[in-house]
Image (cartoon, rainbow, N blue to C red; front, side):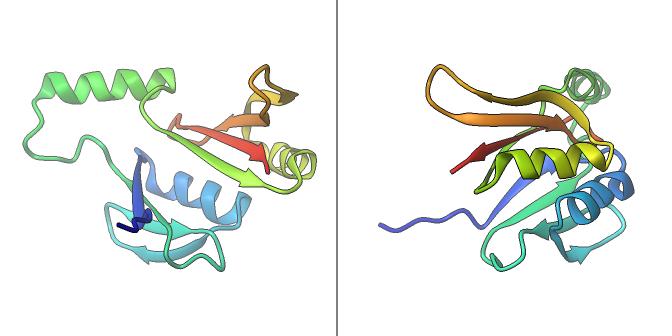
Length: 131
């Protein structure tokens, strides 16, 4: 069996702010956009997409569940994505210069990864590893 990731969902409570981060700062293509969600992805990789969506828009959620989601997003633990780059320092410098919220500066981890991380406008952790 051969499987690949077609799309992954990340919460976006302010769609325009999230689009600006992924499109303008990370350079992702906007592949589809509606009033509540948008699909973006890295150029040259049309088979892999991120769907930015309002996490509390599901009509089956209770008010308590919506509040829990909002709390998790505020803590930055609701959504995480790991991206790879051949130039971690250059990627870090460019994203930091664009004003993104730095969580961790580039460092070599004890398990071998050389990585850094930022928060997107919705509080999602966006980690970059050099490959």
